[in-house]
Image (cartoon, rainbow, N blue to C red; front, top):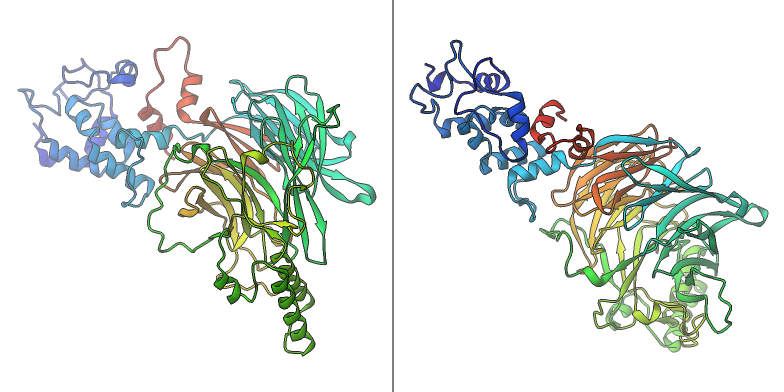
Length: 626
């Protein structure tokens, strides 16, 4: 008989891993839940040289007390603990101990100890299993129908279809079945498009918005948005979109937002955002097919880009409530622009309203320049004058009673340089969500040239991606940071940007930054060549592409990187199925789209039919350690 002191962790693992011949002992582990069929089919048990059970004495009493087995299990890895739990009832009970799996979880995933368990988790064992077994990290299909770089992916809300855009100038619509297949390919070259770059399904999945780069006269390029019927795949309408990286988005099921850009000076412009009817062939002259939503001033060569809409109706019931935690180490990035005080305006040398104040401000600026006291460059002078003029001709944000029907228009912008370093947020009220009513801003006063933003988020870096959580409560932002303390002296020469990509998270209800930046992915292009890398957010995960030839997946609650998904070139876009977060698509410059599923789903799909239930998690874990 072996004494307790003769057991080492290595010997215990060897016993757990070695199937012996003989008759199963009455204390062998019976089937538990979904593991029953696998355990019974493998006949795992342990016996000594002459058939003696090495875990029990002759009277059936365990040779090792639970406390000692627990201490030994603490020194093992997760796979060894699971294997040891197959030996007998005692070891199985200890191998499911909550404190044991809490230690395994924090040690294996390297989560900070002050981070609590996911609020929806039922046990530490199940939580470990969720992060290991339910992350879409197994490549199951590669789609090669595109002939050039694939730039963007988007799912329908039902999850039955998805669309892809590419440098080959096609928009492809796919059927998302167990095996993905191509339904339709729309070639946009006959419409003078250079390539397609973005797509989005409307809320009822009856229409597809497709955005691309349009080649105009003298090889000038702007953008254009096309609306495609998903019943007949017919092209229903086309809308100009400038600059092209506004992309466009749906506001309602039948109306979409586009942009236009008007130059005012060398580095000053205004962006006009338009609400367009998806069906432009309206016969009645009394029905508007387009209406101006907002007109926003741009300073220092900045422009509005990358528009998206957040629905406020689910802010109070998010899928996952993120804990803001300790904000002490986070910089203040969010600014409320709805209530500047007179004192703040005076401190900056500007006043918020009144033509008299504006004229006085302009007079002081010009007198200072003429007297030689103001050392302003041409760009700085233009910006100063533009700011003063706008102060007297900007419509302040409209008051709202926290109506849940409201929506937020979100876009990238800036105030210091052409590099998009800020996120603008403008509330859209219910009466603004239709093309009916005044056209071309007839409802605004004659002096209100521009619309003021409600909030601005300054990330102090180059924004290269944005995505909303499924409940629209949280905004995730890919940003490449500027050096700490950097100052923009010339709007045409922004600071250098980091190779590391920071994934920032903002709560749109509280307008606060939450969590600390997620990091793992990288990008290498400089400011003037930087391009958008699309990210996506599911209930529990967030994923992003990168220039280092990988896609990445993080857990939203624990802020840890769970998987790297390899391609042969830059990964431009990722997309979770909205109905099944264990399916992820990635699109790359290598002209392929890859489909990734979780190990759990792969076992289900690969199992022979008929079958009682999936192969157990711990067996897959033991043979596929990451």
